[in-house]
Amino acid sequence: MTDPLARRQFIGLISTGIFCLAGAANAAERKVSQGRTYVRTVKASFEDTFADLEFAITERNYRITGVNSIGRAITDRQDQKIAFPLASVVHFCNIEAAREILEISMDYLVLMPCRITLHEIDGGYIKIEAQLLPLDDEPLHATAVRVNAMLKSIVDFGAGDW
Image (cartoon, rainbow, N blue to C red; front, top):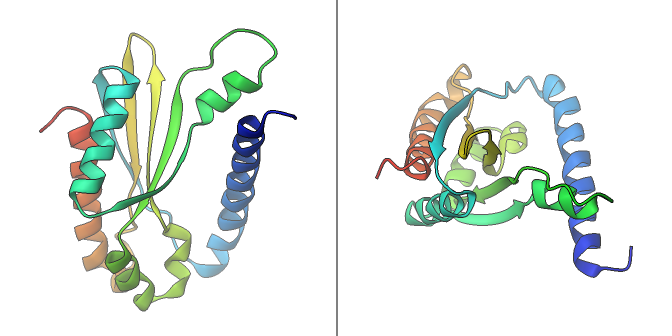
């Protein structure tokens, strides 16, 4: 692969996949449940929805730590000229929230950073989904309620509920 951008995207996808597999395998050992998700759908462009999510994340004092543009990477990787639907994973974190969660238990590291996905679906709609923190773990419960409310407000903003 001679294109440096394509190489970085491919390595990022592979690294993310390995990290996800390692996290999934170890989660059972740590007895950390993955929680649930919060989903909204909006009829808007992918770019506008992404921009709204980015704004909402930064306005809540969170910093975007990475974006995996999986849909674009698949399209760029295909030999055909058929576009794969746009799909991205946005990773973001607030150091104070992370500290608070990890002081409870380092086993919660598998839940870091916060992430929201968005992808195109039929009819010009965008599906936005956030991975929520588990509420069934008592030491984490109060923090999870607060962080989950923030995640839901970001998704709602991305769905046009300003």
